[in-house]
Length: 250
Image (cartoon, rainbow, N blue to C red):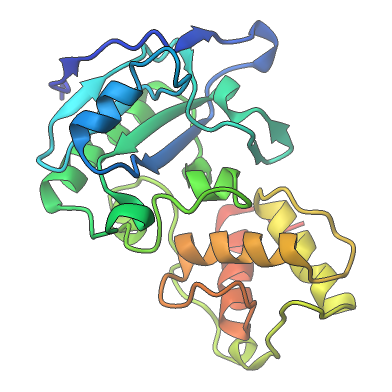
């Protein structure tokens, strides 16, 4: 099905590096600004040096700012699956939402319907694995929170866009929680699992601020009822299940 959109060209783009390879990541964002108009204008402001390929308003209106063959400037300093500079190999979609700073709220049905149609079209044209449909917070967990814990990742997964845990085993939920200051083999195993799934995390066996931020990003995506950066047994079970579900277990 053809996607209906309004052209809203942004000068904030450049050529994708030839050495980067093909497009294999889709990154979803929220605009985090007070209005759609303010966000669209900022993404067209040369001084702002930010953009995305697409933007979807809350009423479902789709705007195209940057052609997909070009590099949009949406992810910034980022990492996923041993790849830095995610802009080189990704498509970025902004969802109009005031974000945590201006009154974060759920994403309306019309907006989600439009996203499902657009993302489905994008996935039909690019070789993007389900587990590589990500939030900005996944690729930049130390800096970003979007699209956040109110975003309906489960609904997207039901439409074949992204992944969602089908189940998590009960016994593992009784495992002790890991948090700031903890150290040892269990922390290292958690860090290695997060790294295998795609997050940029060193496996040093010490649960510091980096581990906490990345666990919080994982929870924003996959365990939205608890977003505190503490790797309790249920969070760890969900991660282990997703590794098996996606074939990314070491």
